[in-house]
Image 1 (tube, rainbow, N blue to C red):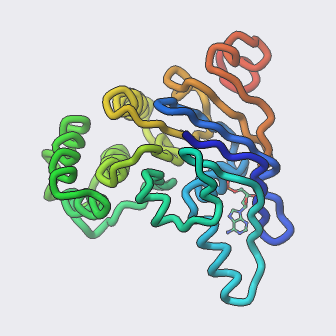
Image 2 (image 1 turned 180 degrees about the vertical axis):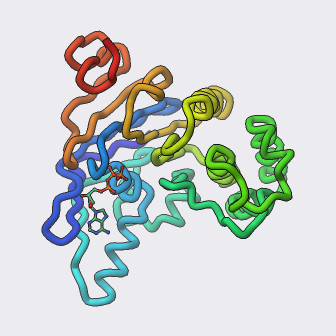
Image 3 (image 1 turned 90 degrees about the horizontal axis):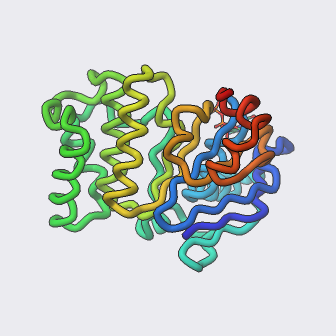
Length: 249
Ligand code: ATP
């Protein structure tokens, strides 16, 4: 489905991603875990193409602040130079960190904005799907985004991403700042999305523990480099890894 190799991203002289290799197969959930500043958002921006956009804009303004190296293959094609809008059309949809919903628009408007890549019948079916997955959103559909709780905003952000017909959904820290109860709901929904929609997902999080039960494969990022990777079972079978990275004894 997607394979990125030798990814290096520099912000000026600062190395934000150091020779990262990430792979996500069809219908897999891949976890990318790492502390603040480990490079999770940089990775998501690079895969979705936003980083390439930032690089181009900087270059047009005469600067060369951002450098991106490495290869990203998606569905057998090299997509490294392809702009984010084309990647989205091909099914790579980013649900960014800190939700980024339109706070002045209603729930319904936010969801409709997400449907910009969908046909009318896809939009209708996806809307029904989102309301089945997150019934709370249906009751709140006229509410302005900014008046939703953090958990509701995250549901809306995921719902909006689903409206864009993803084949590979990139969830950047979806659990950030939410209560354990809401986190559990969102983790469960993530697995349901994969099972029902048969799509692939890459999920970043600072803490592995809440997401680990649903991932097929995981990478640990430290200072921009993948220091550890493996299938969930392999990682959990290693007692040192369990204690050091997953807070599980
Ligand atoms: P967080 O959990 O805090 O979001 P993260 O793992 O997503 O962290 P990134 O946001 O990818 O980490 O940042 C990786 C490194 O790159 C950090 O040291 C950060 O300060 C730096 N960085 C990120 N964006 C920029 C930028 N636009 N210009 C310069 N440096 C940046």
